[in-house]
Length: 239
Image (tube, rainbow, N blue to C red; front, side, top):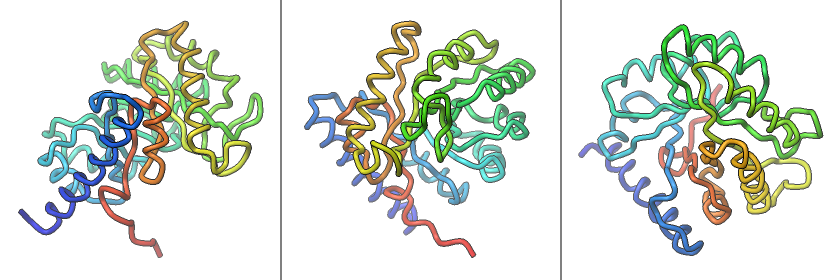
């Protein structure tokens, strides 16, 4: 085992222990929570090693990094999640490799994703990104729709050819009433998920929590956690 693969294996084991402990503390089964490893800025070789170590879900947030990496790893049994803010001019590329787009936050993006999914004869799972720091009718600092926009956007996704409404995603906000209150933020997301599932029972995915706050996400009821740094290490500063 190479040094890097050994490092990734040890990091994965530590994250696995954290998720298992958080599930036990919340009375949840470990299999209720899926680990998504965020591989942004790291090479395809790391993705390949992670796959060999049993990882099945990986995430990227920039198409220019994700597209060549996904192509290089196309032979691997991976589910690719796109988690970054997505511009419509990148939709054609993203629709070619992403299985799940977790950052759907506006009608124009839904239209573009639907058009490309149909053209490429693919089905894209979509999560509505919820901005808990947004005012009514607004968008968040890091993308996302305000809670009052979920219902309308959910209906759009559910009715769009080539798309499947899978659930909700959020990032713990840095500003507003939930700043520094990760558990409360994730509990709010779970309430919003309950509302969404009344109309769309299959939209039961809740993506929340990262390296620093995955325990709070698990405690709140998240089905997926997105972990980068705790698995891959601290990213080198650019520039």
